[in-house]
Length: 247
Image 1 (tube, rainbow, N blue to C red):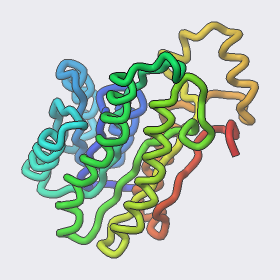
Image 2: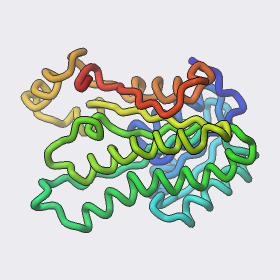
Image 3: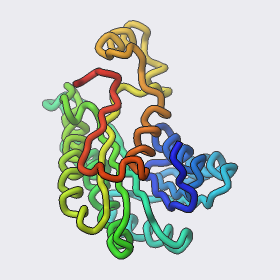
Image 4: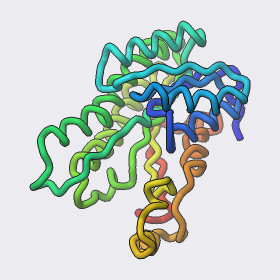
């Protein structure tokens, strides 16, 4: 595992699931970790799992679709940690439905959090990163942003948009020493996938070359690699962590 001792990291949507595992992995590697989410109780519980690793921990309830919330969070992290080195844009929601049945409100909500939130949080973080002429942004996209998926027009559009943002950010920010990459997970083993009927799981797994779902740790390892010096000449890249579901 790469050493992130003394590095200052933000993980959005860091109170549970993949985001929490990413935050824990950074903390375990020595980083100071700030997480945000919309549920204060979930943040407090998550923070307790980060504290044993010894780095500083900071939490704040944030609506990533609000520019004021994003700027406040980044400013508070810098006050708490002294600086900011790495941003992981992980916050995301789903409101699935077939396109003909999808409400405009559900379209807007998913785009606001997943895509606009990535734009706003990155913009807030860049004020710090540009001044120090170094930084790292990793966006959590999805395999469906590359291949599409019926019943998820809003989510797919947001995740495909994140890939476009990643490439554009990489071109815009490279001269300032900021690298920007994305991770595109496939099926990930979570409480939600555990609850699926066996026949549904088997059908999903039949399309995956490795014949297993990813663990949250599989995704976290990819994020830490892209954020590390081991990936020092990688920017604008989308790292597929999908077990061969889509190639």
